[in-house]
Image (cartoon, rainbow, N blue to C red; front, side, top):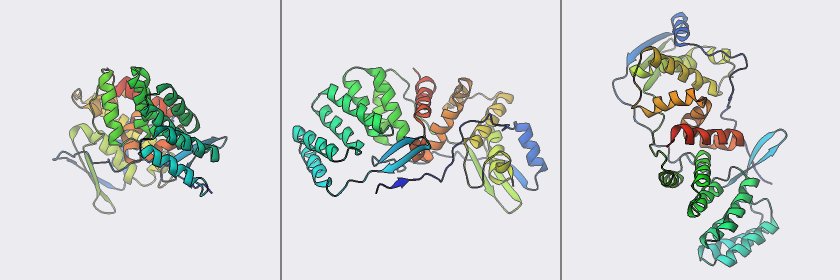
Length: 335
């Protein structure tokens, strides 16, 4: 019995136009003033460093199915009668005996056609033989059956690059990175392909200069860099103001992108009102550009949600993943 993976720890709400109204910094300030809580605001005196998320990884053990009722993600399980054949294929692959590896991988698929990851392995063997047409064909089969197969996208990108097809290489390596946001090997390959395409390779992390602490049942301390003050106020209200999340349509214990959208919009308004220069601050300058080009949802998913919860990528519809890809290529890392 294949095991269904349920991602119930995080609820994503991508659209706001369902009667939800984002509050301005002035409205948020009034909410704080009228609150039964006491919000104390200080200037942050230290720089907060990016945290290491390299251990938050996805693995090549998942596949998903699309049904009328939604997307469902499962883990692969090799049947006992299939495993000896698969093990032979793996042994031949490790020994560099390509033709025998391909033969037994194909025998594995004959025995169980739902092992879509095996299609990726067949493509990998063809790629090692420089048989690019067969490699591409098998990677595309794997992706058509299981779009979240980040290895198929990754290896397909490398194959396209070997064939001097930079455009398709860019698309595929970007999708691979979205599907496994913190994988350093994919990031290295992405950087190399972007350099070949003369794309920006600047990297940065979303790293708000904000600390919010609950001092007591009635007192909240907010410390923030001046640029981040409006963001910090919004976050404090979302985290601590009783009933506020529910008033915005978010159930207790759940996360919605509405939260980050309101905080980021408040941040941008605050920066605009104070005429703060942000050109040399990529997370803020790219946020502004993403908002102007209508990629705010994609910014939130790629910069905030996926680094912290990479498994969420396996829940995203293909259209959303392609929109994030467009954000990366047209805003974050444009030429």
